[in-house]
Amino acid sequence: MEEIALSIEPRDGRGKGLSRRLRRSGKIPGVFYGPKSAAVSLVVDANEFASQVASLEGSHLIRFRATTPELQQRVALLREVQSDPVSGAILHVDFYEVDLTQRLQVTVPLHFVGKAVGVAEGGILQPVLRDIQVECLPSDIPQYIEVDVSTLAVHDAIHLGDLRMPSNVTAIFESNDAVVTVLPPTVEEVKAAEVAPEGVPAEGAPPAEGEPKDKEAKEPSKGA
Image (cartoon, rainbow, N blue to C red; front, side, top):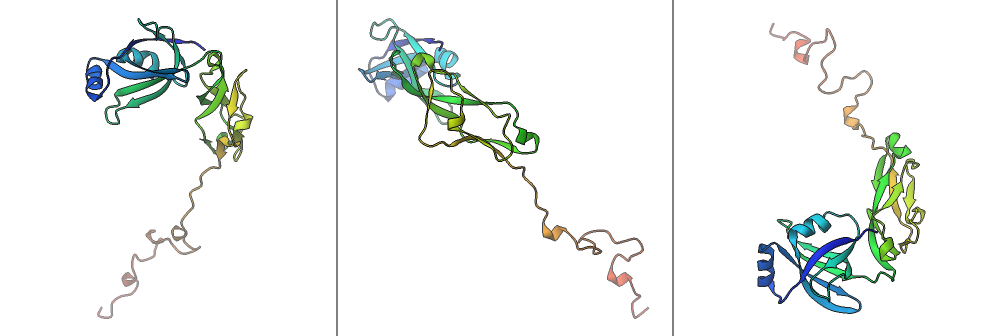
């Protein structure tokens, strides 16, 4: 897996006031932690994070570029991004340190390719899962798992155990759930009220040729 280089700086102090000042200056507060090291507060340039990391799909290795020895060349995964629910602005980021020699579990997105046979027959392709958990070495993390749906007929499904995994990558799951299926075509049921019996015009239909438009026109009034 290709590594992403990201410039970071150590951060002194904590608190909402400091975090707001950092964001106004174009920085994002964050934290770097791991199973064998204490948490370290840091900041990231907002523009660099947006261009290098924020738009990426799946899990990617991030190698720090820093002026301090404790952070320089450390390798991490982006673990969490906190965003403002209204503006979408990034408020805080968490980085988790990884050991390149140890297997780990990460979430990997699924990409569905091909046109299912059942879709050509009018069915609807219905993804059930959009990503899965896998275990592998950090350097073997796949960008995505490809799922070929071209052979699926209506009511067919591909399950977790059917996925073709890359070399040295293992899918992690407890039950063999469906990943994607093809639903049957949707058929609009004609309402019974809209179907008229044979020989009886439906309500609102124009009268047959020669037939008076209303009952009063069928016979003259008694006073005529």
